[in-house]
Image 1 (cartoon, helix red, strand yellow):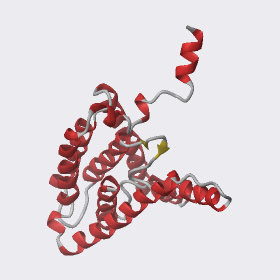
Image 2 (spheres, rainbow, N blue to C red; image 1 turned 180 degrees about the vertical axis):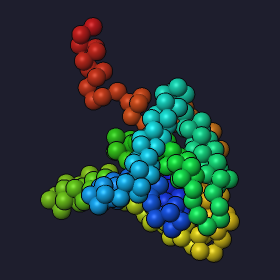
Image 3 (cartoon, one colour; image 1 turned 60 degrees about the vertical axis):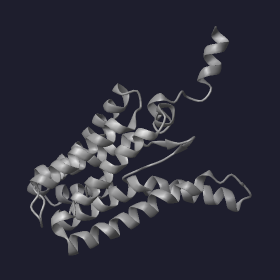
Image 4 (cartoon, one colour; image 1 turned 30 degrees about the vertical axis):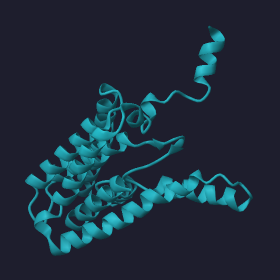
Length: 222
C-alpha cells in the first residue's frame, strides 16, 4: 500500500508539472505513438527517453536485488536517493528532463522490490495488471471459486489512488515540498525493512523464487 501510495504521489506531481507520466509507461507509450504519428519528433524523443529510463530503472533495481540476495533496504535506499536527487534539481513548479528521468529511474527501480506476495503476482507503480487480475479473480468467485487471494490486487490500486490525491494536494498547496514527501516516505520505508528477516525480504521478489515443481525435478533426477 505504501509503495503504491508513493508511486501515486510521485506520478501526480510529475504529471501536473510536465504532463508526462513517471510510473505509467502505457500512457507515455500512447503519447509517444501519437507524437510519432503526427510527426512531432521534438515531443517524441523525451517520451522515448522516459520509457527507456523506466526500463533501465527496472534493470538497475533488479541488479541491486540480485547483488544483495533479495534484501529490500539497499533497493529502497537507492530509490530514496533518486527521488532526493530529482527534488534537488527540480524547480518548485516544473520538471526538467534530468529530473523527470531521475523520477522514472526511481519508479522503475521500486518495482524490483515487490513482485509477489506469497504466490500472488503484484505491481507497485502501475495498476492495470492488478485490476485485470482482480477482475479475473472476481469472475472465478462469481462462478463459485472461493479462493480469495485475488482480493489483495485491490490494495495497490487503492494506494495509487490515495497517493495521487495526496500528491495533487501537495502540488497545489505546498509545491516546495511536494517531491520531498514521497522521498521521505520511501526513506522511512527503507528504514522499516531493516526489521524484516532476510527470508521474508527474499519472498517479495521472483528472483529467488524457484519455479513450481523445480524442486521435484531436481530430486527425481538425483
